[in-house]
Figure 1: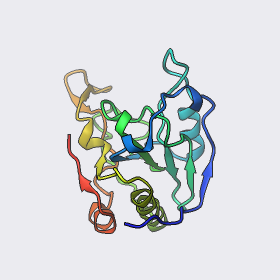
Figure 2: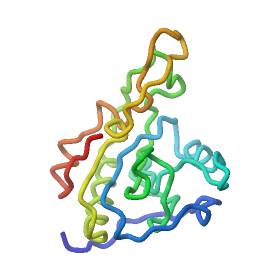
Figure 3: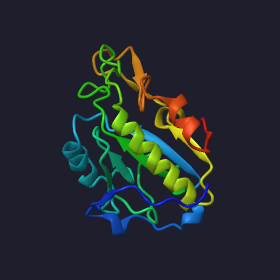
Length: 189
């Protein structure tokens, strides 16, 4: 796929971006699709700014796509974001604003992920993916977060039950539409 002009991206680096480990673009062969499981982009930013590690960094994706298709970049591609256990050095994290299971992530009675992804959001995702495929020669794979992190947590409402740790991007994500638009192969954990 030839290099495409980048879609409109609003760069808003996280305060700790320079503390994240560096990498080269040749190291990147995987895109991981997430949903924020939060109500809006402002709260996603708040969560992304939280320092959780001794390195002075936290959890965040590289790109966030709001429901209206606006793309914001929180972490540069030459930095390793903490977004998917075991795959961070080789992957780009793309977060789609979507409520998911918010605010009852571990409650076994609230595991449905029933907010649809708007057309504008998916169109922006496809545009970004097509650009990345042209700009990153090693990029070959795509995965849902739920495919790579299959661990379970004890349910918050019942210690005898377990729930998936990650369910994103969830059952309403339009995989056929996205996979038909990009030359990436599915990678399952």
